[in-house]
Length: 284
Image 1: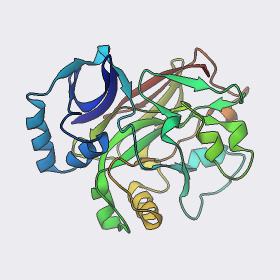
Image 2: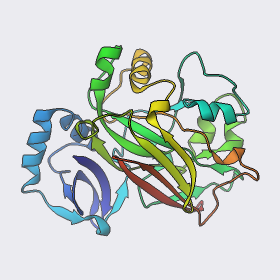
Image 3: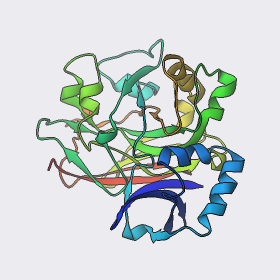
Image 4: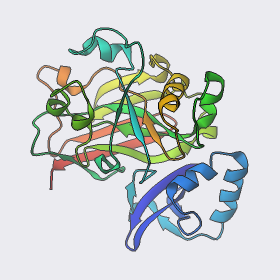
């Protein structure tokens, strides 16, 4: 099952993607977070399928997709979580002793097909393709045995970064939270449809050229470790998004650096999850 949010001519909706349509369930659930919580269980997915039978539908090519969860209470991101990204970094030279966690704001994300915006305050706008997990049930102090069960689904994530602002201090948040600088989508694929989250191939392209390619088997801190760590310092809730880190091949290490500029199209593909594609414009 695929869960998506969108804007139509009459307003925002969220629901289930069925082939080339989105089934609007926004009158049946209070928020996309509640829908994510519902599809986290087998019984919930069956009930959602029944609700879809008589719900209105919209053609996907007639709506503007938004991030799957438009109002997550938390967006947590993991830094330096692939060995090849550490190897290319000019800031770290070994795996961190604990997961490196920073936050993004919901206003920093757009959906599939929406424009990314390069801020006029930055000259070094970079890309990072990632796999995101979306939480489906309240979770605190998870163990390795219980952590995976907290995942409702998976999505593609583009952790767009203003590198100059990221480097102002040791704190990542300013460089990671510029308005409309990152993306998530095109939808959330429910966890029951991903047989092995450690057998996923992630590919990032810039204007059609492959710049990142990795397998989730290469994660330093795996999904269980990430959930255990994050649920120790905060209660994870349905709809919370955790971006799991980017592999090597980011733009600032290239010679010359490959910065995102207006007209550039960035695509993050996670096989079995989806393809997230966005074109850059200057900040409006």
